[in-house]
Structures are given as C-alpha cells and as structure tokens.
Picture 1 (tube, rainbow, N blue to C red):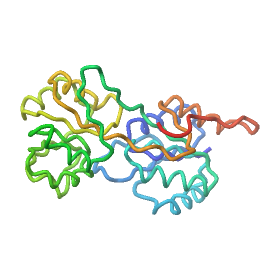
Picture 2: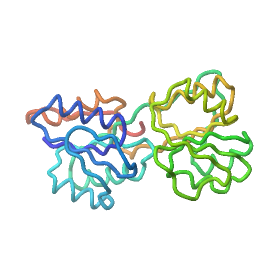
Picture 3: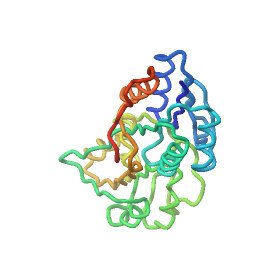
Picture 4: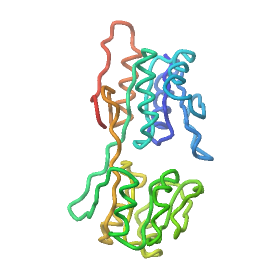
Amino acid sequence: MHVLILGGTTEARRLAQALTAGHPGWRVTSSLAGRVARPLLPEGEVRTGGFGGADGLARALRELQVDALIDATHPFAGTISFHAAQAAATAHVPLLALRRPGWVPAPDDDWHGVASLEEAARRLPALGRRAFLTVGRLGLSAFAGVDDVFCVVRSVDAPEPPLPPRSQVLLARGPFTLEGERGVLREYGIDVLVTKDSGGAATAPKLVAAREARIPVLVVRRPEVPTGVAVVGSVAEAVEWAGAWGAEPGTSSPSGTSGQA
C-alpha cells in the first residue's frame, strides 16, 4: 500500500506519522510544495516541488504506483486541490481531502467576511489605520496599493515585493501564544486584523486577542473543496479512510463528506 500525502501542514505531518507508525509495511510519501525555506519534515519519504499540473500529478500517481492520495494541503492551496481531483480521476486513484475545521466567531467578535484578499485590501482602509496582516507572504501583493494603512506583516520566511508601501515585517513561525499576540497588538497599536480562515489552534490566539481588544477582523473565506471529493476534518478519520483502502480485497470502500470542508 502506497499513500501519497500532499502536505505542508501540521495535519499532514501528523497523518504521515500516524500512517508510518500504524502500518509499518506501507510506503508513505509526503509531497511538499517547497515554498518554505526550512520546512518541518514529516516521517516517511519526502519529495519537494510541483508535479507540473494535473497531468504531471496523474503521471506521478502511475509511476509511483500510488494506491491512495490524500490532499492535506493548506485550506487556501486551492490550485493543487483541483489538480489532485483531476489527477486522481485520470489515474483512477481514490482521493480524500483532509481539512481542519474553519473558525467560528464568538458573540463578541467583530468579523467581516470577504471572498478574497483583493476584497480585504479594498475594505481595509475603512476599518483601521494600523493593520496586522497574517495572510502569508504569497498573498501580500494584494495589499501593495494600500498606502494609507500601516501594515505589520507576519510570515515564516521573508516576503518578496510588492509589499504594502507602509509596512514592517515580523518573521515568526507558529504556534503562537495568546500573550504573544496581545503583545503584538499593543506594541504596534494594531486596530484591525486581517487573516484567512485557516482554522486550527496554532494561529487562533490572534482572534482571541482581537476580541479582547475589540478590534475588527477581516476574515477571508476559504475556497471550496472540489465537487465530489470526500472530506474529513481530522487525522484520525483520514487514517481510518486509508486503512479501509488498504484492507483485504472485498472490504467496502470508505466514504467521507462530499463537497466542502
């Protein structure tokens, strides 16, 4: 049984560890996009770099003799998810999407949902003058034209231009603590937070800090999972799904929620 994990997330690393430990005879390969300079490597085999679109991924599934494909990429890595759906259908390989649940606002939250980073950039000046941007370094170009808001930009690796014209970069990797997030808001006088609905606990403390400080939050809604792809929200469910595909012939095929995460 060969499982290919499209990874780069905490859930992907935990999944690789669980599959490697729980099924010693299986081959577990994690594929990383290579966008982070020093990624945290999962257990099992690791490959880095793209596949060359859906056709390239389909070829890789055949050449590597992959028995099951699990898309455990970031909830906002939309392109690879659609490539995975196309490639899995072409190569006749079962596909599962592992997506951490999205965040849910509390009664005291002042959230403003938007469909894209571009919409967030357009709405930002109306909500504050000192913004905390936690959208990842690859999405910062959407804010390059926002010249009337000072932006504190946080990312794992140094972002490349274009950046907001009035900005300061903080290099940091999560998980982040509530006290640390409170400190960032205080130190830089933040009056608006911008984030993607990434879900998970590693970066959630910023939302609590924003709630406590009573500042608005621009939340970019996550893209949908491709239609027809089974979706689970936990590593345990993904392990169960893979185990069913790796069972003896005659075992019924596993199922998950089809559609959105």
